[in-house]
Amino acid sequence: MQAKEIVFPDALGFPDGTRVVVSIEPENAECEASSADSLDEIMQMPFFGMWADREDMADSVAWVRKQREQWLQRLTRQG
Image (cartoon, rainbow, N blue to C red):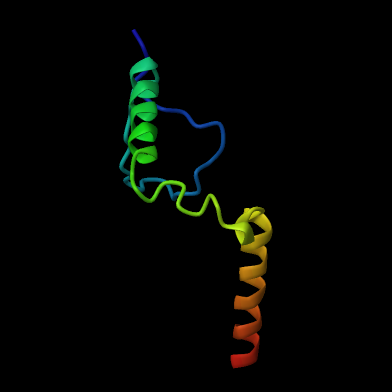
C-alpha cells in the first residue's frame, strides 16, 4: 500500500491549513508525445518563424536587452 500524501523537499511557504489545488498528471511517453504533437501544431501556424529573416533580431538576446534599455530610458525621463 502506498502513502496517500505528497511530501515536498522544501516548504512551499503556505501557512498550515491553507487549501490548495493540485493537478496530477502521469509522467509517461503519452505526455511526451502530446507535447511533441503540440510543438508540431505550433510550428505549422502561419506566424511561426515570421521574424527568422530579420537581421536586427539575429541575436535575440541583444535585441531584447536593447529594447529593455529603451523602455528604462523612457521610464526614467517620465519620472
